[in-house]
Structure formats: C-alpha cells, structure tokens
Length: 473
Image (cartoon, rainbow, N blue to C red):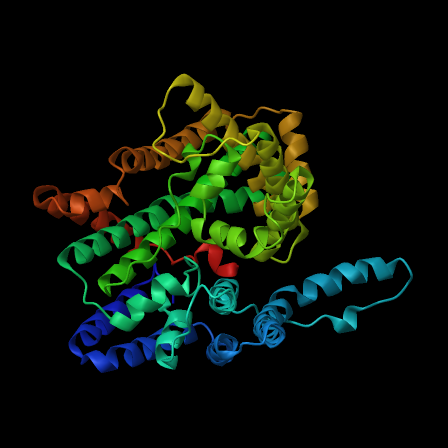
C-alpha cells in the first residue's frame, strides 16, 4: 500500500491504537504480522522471499558468531550473501544480463530469446536485502552480537515504515529499539505527525505535480524544443528529491509514532558545495552502506591514489546498478564515480565538512556548479534509454527556442523556489523539518499543520495516488 493513499491511513488508524493498547509481550508479534500484511498488500507471493532472507540470516548470523574457525565463518558468510544476492540477482538482473548477452549473440545469428522470462520485481527487494546483509556482515566483523529472538529480527527485516524504500537501517540502531519497545513521547508524536504531513506535502504537492510535466515530456521528447527539454531535466531533479525525501519523512514520522527513531536520509543535498558533500547529504543510508560494505573493504583510500580512484568508480558503478537493471543507471553511477575521483584528486588530502553553509558568493557558485554536475547525471537516471539521453543532450546543445520558453521557465523557477525555500528554512533552523520546528509551538502548530494537511488531503481526494519513485528499486 502507498504512503500517499487513504488505505495506508486506514491501516495506521487501525494499527496504532491496537499496538499501543496490547500487552508488551505481544507488541512485536503484532508488528511483525502487520508488516507482512503491509508488504503482502502488493503481492502475497513475495512475502516468501522476505521470510527466506529473514530465517536464513537469523540462523547463519548465530552460527557465524558461535564459530571460532575463521575459514568456517567465511563459508557461513558466503552462504548468507549467496542467498540474499542470489534472490536479488535473479529477480532484478537476470533479464538484464540475458538481454545484454543476447545482443552480442545476435551478431553471430544466435537467439537467446527463449531464456528471457517475464519476471515481476518484488517491491523493496534491494532495500531489505542490503539491510539484512549488513546484519551478518557486522556479526562476521565482530561489530555486532546476534539477537536470540527471531521475532525481533523478523521485525528488523520487515519493519513496514522503511521496508520498501528505506532508510536502509543498521541492526545496531534499529534492533535495540525493537527489543525495548519504548512508547512514543509527546515530542515524538508531535514530530511524527509533522513529518508525515511534510512528507505528504513534498510528495503530493511538489513531487507528483512536477512528475506529470516530466513524464509527459520524457515520453515524447521529439515533440518539444530545447527549453522544455531542459525544464524537464530540472523539474525531474526536484521531483525525485521531493518524492524520495517525502517518502523518508513519512517513514520516519510513522516510526516516531511507534517510539522508533529511523535515520535521516536527506540533509538539503542541493546546498552541497561539492560532489563529495552531495553524497553525504543525498540518500545517506545508501551512501554510508556503500562506503562501509563496499568502498572500505575494497581498500578505500588506504592503498594509494590510483586504487582510491578505482575503488570510488567501482563503488558508484555498483551503486548505479543497485538502482536498476539498465545501462543508463550504470552510466549514472559511473559519472558520479568519475566526479568523486576528480574531486578526491583536487582535495589533495583535505577533509570535507557538511557544517552549516555560509551563503556567500563563493559558496553560491560552488553550489550551482555542483547542482549542474548532478543535474547532468539525472538525465541518464530518468531517460528511457541511452539514445533518449543523447537526444536530450543534442537538442540542448543546439538550442532551439519556442513559444513556450517563458512559460516553462516560470513553472520551473516556481518549483525551484518552493523546494529551496523549504530546505533553506530547515537548513537555517538546523531542525529535522520546518514542520517539526513549529510542531512544538502550539499557536503556530494548530493553524499551519491544519492548513497544510487540508491542502494535501484535498489534493489526494482529487488525484489517483502515484507510487513513490524508489519503490521500483
């Protein structure tokens, strides 16, 4: 079920009172059943995959911890990774590699079409796979002791607020909270409601509105001139941020209503002054996961400059492939890997900080330049094919004006202003959300939260809920 649908709020309306009223010992079993109902709403068949990952990693994690034989521990970790990556690879990448290999074989008049299957991608499989893999890897590295409670672990894997699109949580943060089962404080309830409303605002009023324009132009780019094509790329950069950060806000807000704190996934990424800072502000749970479980094990920056650049490129190429089985995602990841390698070279050992940005002229130029670098990569992320990406680039380089130029730029600038103004308030106040700031001020809270929630829900009444973009990953 979608966070921006009424069925989800009916689900919460039924779930929350029961969860908070039932005895302590029944809370996690009830939360587990509810999470499986939530996930099964899309397709009950895929709850089996969730169950397999849960059971295998629970028992393999315990065996890894208890084993003193390093060789045996490696075999057990390999078994855990094989189960998780095997399931993920089949459902997400099988047809991609078969189709890519088939193109090569066609040059030799060999057809592999019979090997192509109609595979449905399970919702959220990339997210919960990475989450449960981190559990066994941390146990293997002796950074974590396994839980002995399979229900607690099953809730960790299937926790419905962040199951289908993150944040990708670590066991050391989420498992203790699940085990303790604290009731939410008054502040958490206020912040939770505010985050849910702010998430709806971002998703429904910004993400979905820009998305309709973006989808229309990207579906038939040949019908539009250069200004509209450029506007579509800019609007997509706003759409994906509003959509994904909106989801994360709703996920974190729902968690707070259960007394559980989920990690923050975004920190005003379009205020980044360089590409390294961008990846410390954008999809923080994924970028930190890739750093800890891929970049550092590859050697990180400990084996010379060339290996550092190589490790950055490999990490981001695989990060791109994590997003989807398409060469466009690989290109997107590769570009970010190249950006990061170049920036690493230019840094020459200097440290990067994401402290509060001083908006002086120098920093504003850096922010704009970083945004333009990121904007170029978003084209490959959104385009239906590599050929479509090249078409956009050609049309923008060989500029052709149109009668709609001023209209499209007005629309684009208005959404840029709304998005950046919202982030600027968050940035200045150093709060999780502007709405969280006002959520504890009674005189502001009542009027503003009511107004925003009214507009958001009226919008929901008059539109069909659209899926969050990261559900497809």
